[in-house]
Image 1 (tube, one colour):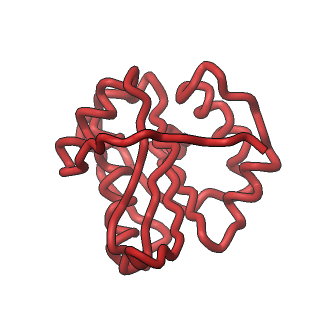
Image 2 (cartoon, one colour; image 1 turned 30 degrees about the vertical axis):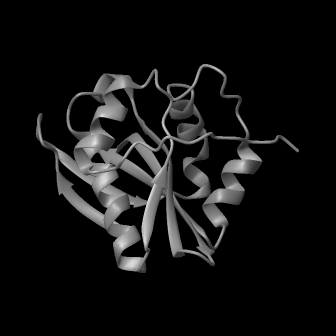
Amino acid sequence: RRDTVKLRRARGGGKMNIRRATAEDIPELMNLYHHLSPNYQDNPSAMELAIGHASTEVYALEHNGQLVGTATVSFRAVPSRGLVAYIDDVVIHPADQGSGLGRIITEHCIQVARDRGSARIELTSHPARVAANKLYLKFGFVKRDTNSYFMAL
């Protein structure tokens, strides 16, 4: 499994790198998360938990040394499916949206899931994130006709 991937940016040149996020990235990651949802509230302890958790891989996407994007892949074993991967929190800084970076980091997450032997990948995306939803469909994700529930504890 590759923890660091060196890439060339699709447009605009420069060096790109996808690597596992570290605790030092937390302030920049929290800044990115504000672009994911207007309701996001900084939660450094949740970020630290995710970065250090055995079932979770938080990735940092850098362009010319600047953190410009992130995505998370987590895994759980499901009796009816086997190992299932979940992609969460794909965020590209607004200044870099439309440059292909969302595609690149999503491809990386899909490859990580394949490398780990996942039987399937699941994700959710808010309907307001039109470009992200189109991207997921292009990858071959299928929109499910299901109810989605959560309970805050």
